[in-house]
Length: 188
Image 1 (cartoon, rainbow, N blue to C red):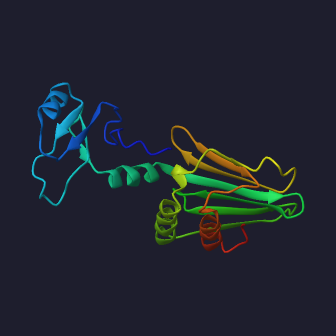
Image 2: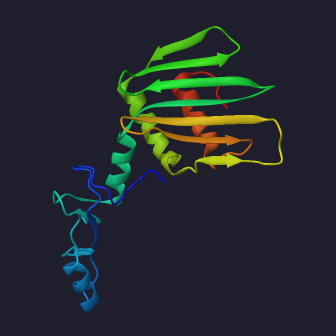
Image 3: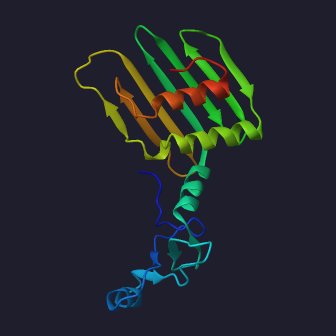
């Protein structure tokens, strides 16, 4: 899992507490004294953050943590292929809004630019396919050949890779459709 809910996206610390909105008991008060939980106060307020940073005081919800995790991605490289089916590769640079699509075996590659709106829709699609929560590796051990794939999420600090051999996450087809939509080229 690449979404760290208990990491402050403002200052980066892991010194974070979960905020509790239930009726405080003696046990909850003890946890608050030891900085293991924080009381949230009014249960009827519209904004109810779930996490609190002990270092900078920032509060956030799980959805805000998910949004911040996807905003850390600055590019994506995806490839899929097999011996008999060819091999597709796409590289998407979020900051430059440029895409390079290539079919291995072909010397030609396609390069195109896309709009801010296209990028926003693409990142929204990545959230819908739950890309950051895919397992690191999907593998069907009883197949000797077939299709292999890899997705690399490029970030400033550490890139994240997901890959597979003849086995895919449940959202794979929707992911391939995202790639086809932004590139207007084959990817499966």
